[in-house]
Amino acid sequence: MRLSQLYHWFNWYIKGHRAMEITVDIDNPIPQFEQLIEQIKAAVTSGVLKPGDTLPSIRQLANDLDLNSKTVAKAYQLLTRDEIIETKGYRGTFVHPKAKTNCKFNLQEWTLRKLVESIGELREAGVTDSEIRNAFAAAINGQSLEK
Image 1 (cartoon, rainbow, N blue to C red):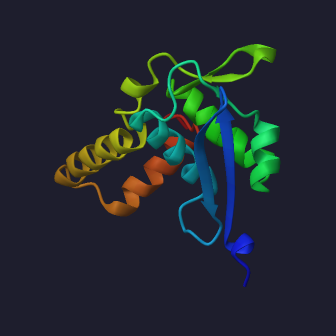
Image 2: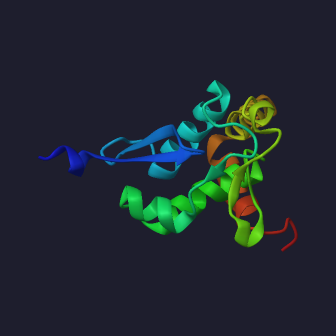
C-alpha cells in the first residue's frame, strides 16, 4: 500500500513562511474532521498560527488533502463555534483573536464530564441504565415528557 493511500498531507504558507503541515491518517480511528481540528488547535497553541492568520478555504483544503469538502466544513464549523477561527464573508477564514485562550477549553470533555455526573446521580436515585438510555434517546430526539 502506498503512503498516499494512508496519509493525506498539505502545507500552507502565510506571508511567505511555511506555517504548518496537516496530515490526515485515513486508517486512524479518530475521525478525519477531528484530526483536522486537533492539528489546527495544536498550531494555534504552539504559536505556529497566530491571530489574524489566513487559513485555506474549505474547498482548497479539501482538494489539497483529497478529502470530502463536508469533512473540512464540519471541522471549520466546530472551530468557528469554539472561536478558534472566524469567517469574514468573502474575505476568507482567519485565526480568531482569542483562539489561543479558547483552545484551552474542550467542549467535548466538558460535555462528557457533565454526562458522567448526571448518570451518576441518576444511578444513585435507582434509575436503570436502560431507563437512562431511553430517556437520553428521547431527549436527543426532542421528545417531550407529555404523552
